[in-house]
Amino acid sequence: MEPAQILQGLDLVVGRVTAAEPHAGARGHSALLTIEVGQRGAVQAPLPLAVEDARGLVGTQVVCAVGREDVVVLAVHSHGSGVVVVCPAHPVEDGSPVA
Image (tube, rainbow, N blue to C red; front, side, top):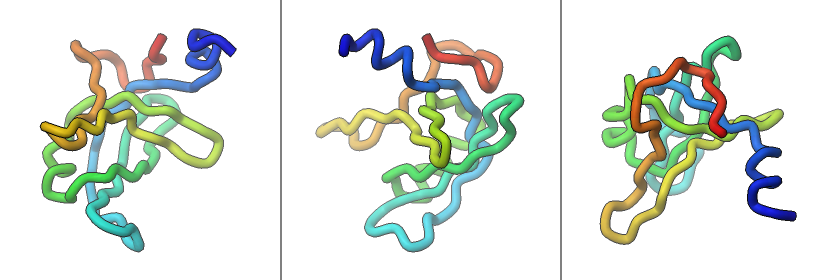
């Protein structure tokens, strides 16, 4: 399957982080983000980041992959910078699809 076909099959949307709390039961550093994704309402997604750092994302828009039962925040794992969350370059409406 071609990369373009795979991407079209994903439900990628932009959401706004509204809260970051400790992710209970997670191993290592992990935060549980609450993300507003437009008409879909609020969803929760884990992020492998210290809670203190994740709280700095509150108010930020992030790119998410939405599944039937879970949501994944897209991030880059950089050797020099650690976890870097993928964000739109300009503000858009929460819930906007990523193409």
